[in-house]
Length: 414
Ligand code: URA
Image (tube, rainbow, N blue to C red; front, side, top):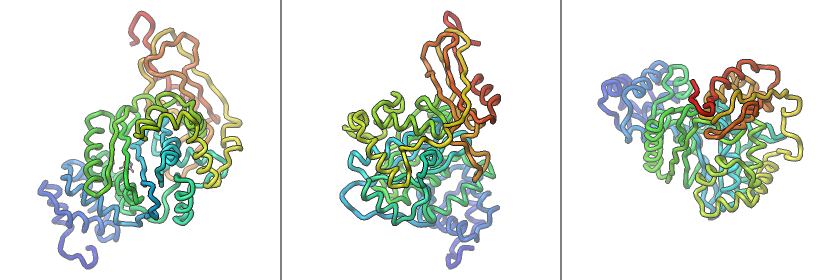
């Protein structure tokens, strides 16, 4: 039992959660401290999360869970210099390169953006993996370096430093093992504990729905958005949640170096419309569109990359030497689906994502997606270009074939 906190019993907390009797904030905080100290066993923690998975948690208990998880580790603080501190979190998608564009854009608009990002998870890409395709770019910086870069450049995008929300590391691993990831209170605690430990004045949440997203339907995504918004609000961080579709990939590229290339185009004012529009919507600033079109955010991006050791004058890693395979439209028609999950899985098969934590990825492989839903195509026109390194090509091709629907002119597709 957690040392010095003998007022509660693990068994009573498990029974109350199982039987939907509700928990006090004190009980939840006590339980989380016990998970981190090891005095609540893995079996007890896993049982508790499965009760939460099936029965849910009240908003008050979810807030207590989030607070206890946030307080389980280091909390970053930034000296006040008059510029608000803001960050964005996306629940994950395919071709979602928004962070690479939004962080420097916000910095250019007068915010400070201490963006702590993650690596790819299953079929969804990770911001750190993308940025590491820039030669020299480092995501391992200590707090002193981060503080200097945040003050001089206005933004950084780095990996976790020290022990941010260690309770989440433990609980997330157990959820993964016990198939209890997709629970609104548990996702709320997991995401917010990491973001709120970043010392923010404001948070923006990009909650995805659709085949390539974690929550597939609008209703569940909307319940998650409401939960995160109200809990973050209770904890004193004003939070705006935006629900965005993830049924087809964002932009025209999926894969690490390819997505950096497309982000640079967007920062220079030449990005695909869907990416540009989503960045502007999330930035939520009257000058966001004009600044992004002007290319000024690109200069800020260059400063950030340089401050983190990256060399944008060198070719992106991995693109040299990959093979290209073009997939053509089989008939004249209108594109009805470019399924995000299939494209994400295809990129994963080519080596853009990890089979398991710590495995290596190939920065150069991926997919150029030439078509969008609603677009007319003619037979023989390229619909995808696969950049491959002799791994997973056949599987990727069949995933893409299954994910693309073209309605033939004058008739319906099967
Ligand atoms: N991402 C997280 O960080 N946590 C979750 O629970 C789900 C997605």
